[in-house]
Image 1 (spheres, rainbow, N blue to C red):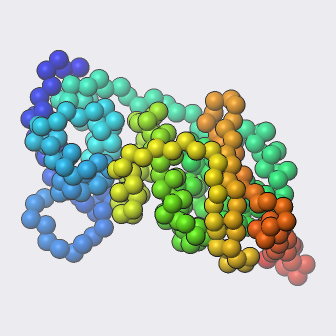
Image 2 (image 1 turned 90 degrees about the vertical axis):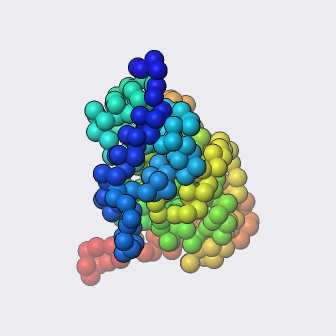
Image 3 (image 1 turned 90 degrees about the horizontal axis):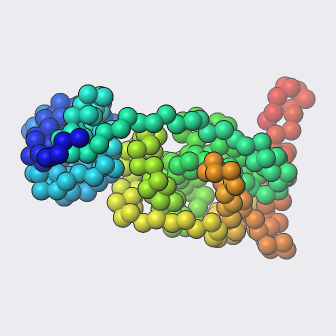
Length: 291
């Protein structure tokens, strides 16, 4: 690590690197307008890195020292290779450690058994970054057919912002989505160099203005219970208690369960929804497949 970081050299490297990048190749939409300068604008780098334009501008001007988490997200935003990453950290006077190998998330068998036993209760197993690792039939009937969602996009936070069905299901979408952002933001503090987290944040930063605003707020939330209000196309309005239990093995897996008070219209609606789903998936004798 350099004992005397040179902020002006860092700024020069950032300016040179962003000038080399193609905006469309970085995931930015094609505007059709003529660019006055080559590569990415400052505000576009800030957007991709999920940091404020003012902060990034001060970085380029050498008026602020970059933190390690900011260097990690700039590494992704600027598509730096291994040599460029080391050089970036050297200029910033920060220790560079290669990303550690992360083990794949594996569903605990006990979680699977719990899901299967909750026949009328929507339940999901959430992993790191709110990845959806497993679900039961009741969760499918409430939300969507998760099996039809590509595995790399099967993330609760991503679907809250990008899936029209799930977004429209939440009567208080802004409240619920902001809570999900805060939950992932809290997790980011424990593993800021997670490349999958960086990819998730980068994608949503580009795609949604609300996400950009809420992520920049640095609001955190570890709440494990609350109330959610849904408007379902089959059974109408639902008010459900949402409770989350963490796995005791330190895997980071959480069981999210949605329930309703017995005797309430929402409780009856869940049972109707489960029955409707069962009818939809009955084998069709004429075709030998499910409808």
